[in-house]
Image (cartoon, rainbow, N blue to C red; front, side, top):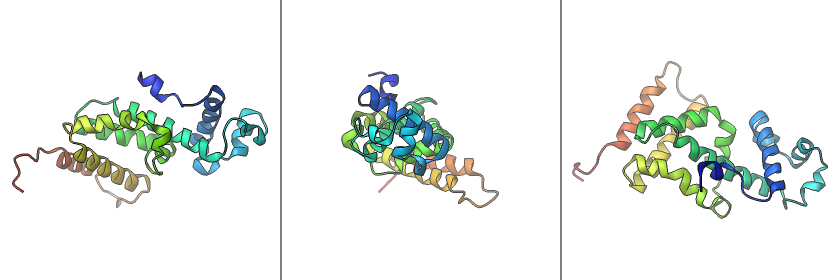
Length: 181
């Protein structure tokens, strides 16, 4: 499956239209604005007509999460394979796409909907730390925490956030095989 295929929402053609409309709303107005009524209006139909294609708003949100996770995976591949490169791509994408980031990593993961897209998004993190899944999850946790702090403006004024990212990623990426336990 190509990166383009992975970034295309799952489902029927009409479900993809619904997701595209929901994405436009999400990106322009945020998660709270994604209502069935507003999605229907974006498509030029009445809200009850949506229920012919999706059972409820949860399905729309699941499809949004699948799409956001795929876009996240594409973004992580954009900057190189080294830990700093992958972390920089993570940060850049999250800061440029905070509403998509919300769906990709801040909501409960719907693995039954996302399927292989989760692995697609995880691969760059795993590769960046030499294939060690535990270190990859630790890098994910570090990146997620730093992005959340940055998005919510929790760093004190004057903080060199780039230096914090470098220190954190370098610590996560350091070879621990020669360190006594």
